Amino acid sequence: MTTAIVAGDDADGLGSALEAEGVETTYIDTPASADSMDEAGLASADLFVLTNLDDATAIPLAKELNPDVRVVVYAHDTLPEFAKGQADLAVDPNLLGPDVVAEELVA
Image 1 (cartoon, rainbow, N blue to C red):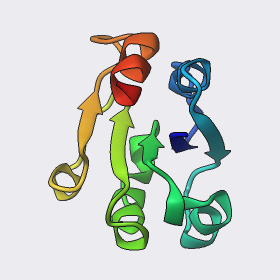
Image 2 (image 1 turned 30 degrees about the vertical axis):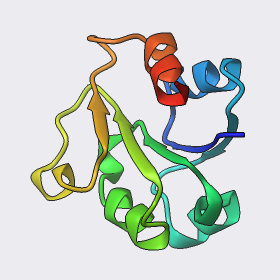
Image 3 (image 1 turned 90 degrees about the vertical axis):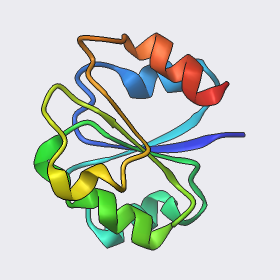
């Protein structure tokens, strides 16, 4: 089973769309910390979804805690330069809806 951690308010509903695809989804508030990521099970998670780029520093932290996690940014804002090389996928919700993104992530 695919597992995901969604950090942020998820106003566009990617977490719900992942759940509809059968993904075991855990939500954490931002700012995400090493402790909150650890408690959410990041060490064994397949996906780390960030929906609030005010917390972009969570991206390198997630990769440090689990180098194999796929980092997905689903936000309207521009990904900061320092995080671009560590995010595996960045999608603007205005371009692709949550159902389409969730379907592709579990395919």
